[in-house]
Image (cartoon, rainbow, N blue to C red; front, side):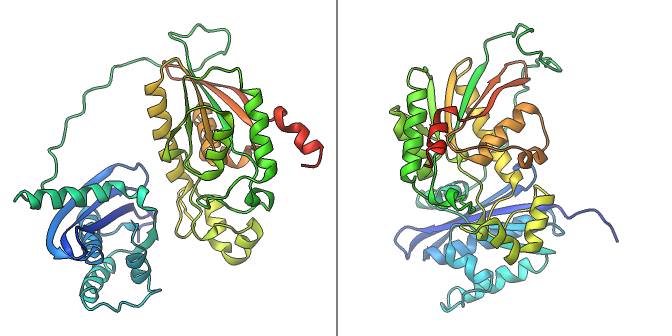
Length: 380
């Protein structure tokens, strides 16, 4: 028997109907869980059907595609259909006669894998599968059959020999760095009680609003080429206090803690001890219904790359959360994910990173919260 860990695949699936019932189609894709690379795409029109039937067809297509890639893989299925996720997880009964054979077919494919886990995700995080479903419906409306795009040969990236290390302040850079100023949001009821609040859309408390005003005063005269913000309310309210226009980047949101959301660490330890121990030991492990640290690192890295490409040599303010800011810090330090557990980040603290075009980055400051110290000292 091999001790080699199973490959991990992610299936994202969706379906839609223009009329419900009406002309319907499905979309699905398979990703490598460790790299995020899309390994397969599937889409098709299914004639007149309901949304739920189309969503099940997307699930079946995604599971079949995963089986074609590696039938021995562990599979994480992510869908924005609460109905399909709950029914396939065995928590809801399947009452509609049109869906029973589809659920049976999907379950039969799933049994061929060592493990299949179903997770609900917000619709905005399932955009790739949704796009495929709409492409299939559009093709059918034009009398065509959806076909995957021809693979493009990537153009070779220009070679730049990176500097192994940078002695900050001593070595002349090839070009001015892009500077990111990282701002954590203000206090919420969840942060007061130290509860997991990844996707919980908590608002700022009165103290949080005061903290946001304090950091706004500190940054009042600092010029920024752009401001980016997480879509979550606590970050947006903090950004609103700055009085500047900002762009929302979904990849700057906090980690989705799944079933741990709104629980304290002690409550998670009591209810999910094995899951918590695995999560603390392995950044690839995700809470049930949530995402892993590696998932967060991948999407934050993508956000960083987009921002740096859009603003070479600029100064950018990013309003976000603990894990994304720590992730940007570990990327700058070229550190392992374990460093996330060894960094402390206060509310409305500021951290600053210079990103250089020849590779190495420099952490200029971390967890600077002097602007809000008086709120702590006065008991607020």
